[in-house]
Length: 214
Image 1: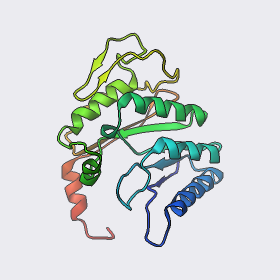
Image 2: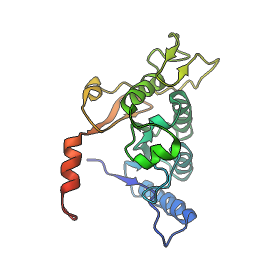
Image 3: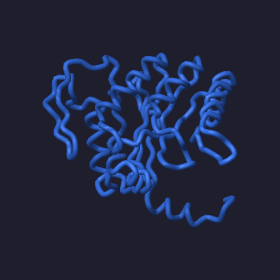
Image 4: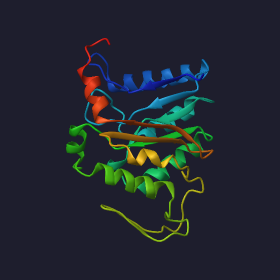
């Protein structure tokens, strides 16, 4: 059995933002020293629930402060960024961390985040699938395939790219899950799935109806 921690980088009114970041880094250092398998980080925007808008930046800080613990993203919200840029940034993080990245992307679910960034929630599944395809290298730029034309972004063929691309392929059954939230997480270095997860609307509704404390 392997143990991990998840850090939302939540902000409380008695804390400053620098304190949240410093405390979160200290938790990651302790997890590394105590032998935890991984630390999982979450992207959020415009909310005290989580104040980490860029997991590549914070993940790089974690990489500098730790030696062996794996660094997981749970998750990078794909509709908010260009998929090839996401792939570039996290390939770089995987290199900087010495191959310790567990990379996860998701569709996002908080309306105010989409509103604040000017992104529609209506076609998040299509955008998620588009980004997954382009970012992981299926007929992707720099790999000999044709240009990929997405619903919102044209993906060309750049002159160069990171040699350490995120190319693992999670099982396709996740694609067919009828869900309000979905995510894909895989090992960046050894091309094998780490976690496949989704949160169907029916389960989300049942969870939201549970009394506090259950």
